[in-house]
Amino acid sequence: MTEKPTILCIDDDKTGVNLRKAVLQSAGYSVLTATCGREAIEIIESDSRIDLVIVDYLMPGMDGTMVAAAIRTSRPKIPIVMLTAYVAVPENAQNWVDHIIRKGQEPAVFLREVGKLLEQQRPAA
Image (tube, rainbow, N blue to C red):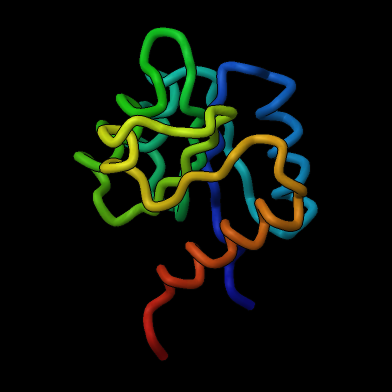
């Protein structure tokens, strides 16, 4: 049996991060959470099993762009998904992430996009 992919979900909104954690766990993923950029970077640097990162765009202190840039610098191969309620995300944010998902999407849409990125990460058999 293969190990469940591990996803790090970062959002300063505890309700939002817990909701996404529940959705991801119900789909069979192992989920770690962080409520700020500094906490997320500490997790990334100490946990090698993370397969994908989901980060909120708008957070106090380190916003999603800064978090994504820091993660990309230390772990360049981890796919990063940015969540946002905004229609347009600045280009500097888009440069650091693999995919942007608008908040409020149906869970099935969210899970499909996460699944696609994880599938792209698997080595060819």
